[in-house]
Image 1: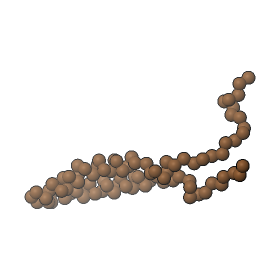
Image 2: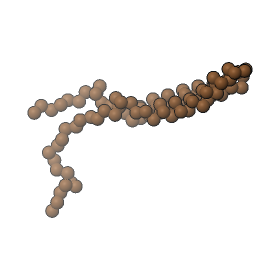
Image 3: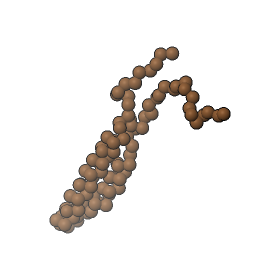
Image 4: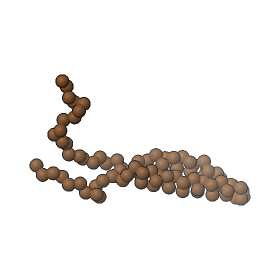
Length: 92
């Protein structure tokens, strides 16, 4: 049997890198929410409904995006099994 070689492109994204990406998306959405909140004070008439909807809906979208795990990162990496017995499987 030939051993499988592991390619760097098939490895999943590191948890720190994925967390950093999700945090960036969350911060962008919350920044847009602040802009909508500011627009609530300067928008006249019925147009105020647009920034109000942004203030209400953007947190839901931001939390949803922050909790989505990238499908590419959830891919499991196959490892070779070793023939060395485990210490926990030892019975006297």
